[in-house]
Image: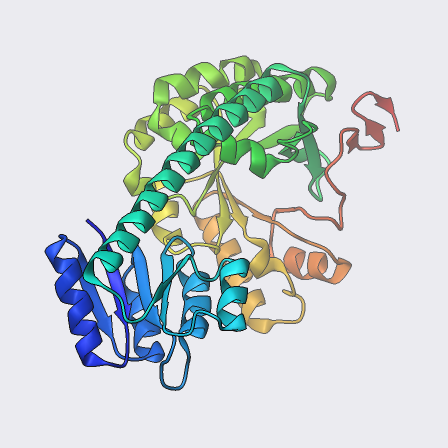
Length: 377
């Protein structure tokens, strides 16, 4: 049945409410004042709150106002002997109070009021479910339209070495108009493989336009690692340029929770792709990820890079990571470089590649040693 919060400073009234509603099969939790009720709201959820208007320190409407903020789905009943109060009517009109029950009340009136509120709740839940299903179906249609049309693009952001670029997902779809909306929708509808297939196709198009020797870094969604065979098929269009593709695996992804990730990485490296650990320093399992993946590239998160020229601790950390990269035959990439002094500090530490707005913003016409991808710049 329902979990009901009964708030009244009169212990006899609380026991009466509890006895009546428990007979109907409901769970009833009591509170004698507003502060106690709000503490209970932090620990558990309620279907209905029955709150007396006359309470010490905080009146019933104030309690219901705060309850609405904490648990908006909880239906709110105000119990009062003063139905003509303008404040009560205003609270009802504003939606802070779902229903008002006049004191003194008969047992049947309380039971009937609670039953009606629960019926209202079920109707609201049914309506919400229908709306959510319709919204989900519409979103899926929009995602299919986005992926099948000419909306998905891949921009390139240069590193300090103009022979290396990072691939960044972009979308011109009117609704799914950015990388996060596209990826979030794909996750909800199980369509990440379709997104990966389109991105691989767009990256292949770049290789047909870029000069030889240009290397591209592209993100590999953690869920891709759970399907090694499917991942291989989606990467196959890039096989001719595998030695120029670096697959970035974010270290935030918990590899231990992904089945078959080891075989996925083995298959990718067998095809000739290089592996990079992305966002090093932004998560909590960096060293274990480095040990397990043995990446060819280590990308340091911008939270460490930002201000490295003025923060001695960050500089020492980057210096240590550079020495680690050298010891493991990896190359260190510093992301998020925005100033010349940051770039100078990173180079002095031994960073192999630098990336950030200081070198260029993501572009659809990248420049490679004085030439754009489509001709002379």
